Length: 309
Ligand code: CP
Ligand code: NVA
Image (cartoon, rainbow, N blue to C red; front, top):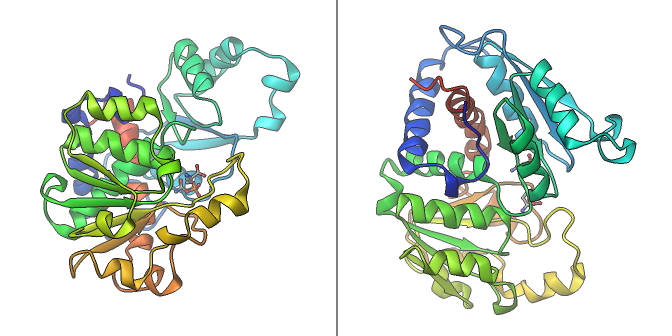
């Protein structure tokens, strides 16, 4: 059994194995309906318990379909219906019950500490479905999408991020270090990655550059990523922050600094960081990106269950 908490902690060999498996599974189930199981139903009889302490559409649906397509089932707990936190039940006792009733636990939370605590007490795998510090399942799936569309290893591509220094960017940074791809980050100087993240970048001999001019970050890009300026539970003066990001809005002009065949990706949901004529353009691959989460989630689950082929 293995946890999937952060890309930093997972050997790149294993991350690549997950991507290879996802590609094979996606190809093999082309003729199947959403709820039909893959041949062999490798997680038959297994229960994935999910809990979202923050909103979710894509992660919720993709894990639901992922476990179903592997032959298992899922149950989504509502945090306000548990005794945990308000009712005073401990993480330790909750984890014991989850481990006795279920086979894996996916948690979206506002506390990295909570993920760690659950990891300590669970005897079933735990998956990070987004935390303040990272969104690992999203970025692994995005690497899958980039390689699927570009038909090249991500290590040979110029990847750009224009936007806030948030959880999704942190995972992209970890991926850049693991997969060794060039990453140009464009953000206002006030919103550069935290000291801890900058130290991680520096101590890993990375191919990462940070620009405070979005045009410089976009120059020569094969892929431009973005995300909302205001993340869930971001405790900032929203209007002020949005204003500070005005120059970083992704529009046709900014896209023109990238390569001609540059694609636009966004984990969704979107805010005002991208103009509609980019978001809905042929360069935008956001719907394919979202759907690929199902395929990659499946191979992440198999990795956690020690069942990757
Ligand atoms: N991209 C993503 O994680 O979407 P949801 O918040 O809808 O799950
Ligand atoms: N950075 C965003 C990602 C949402 C999927 C957030 O944390 O709200």
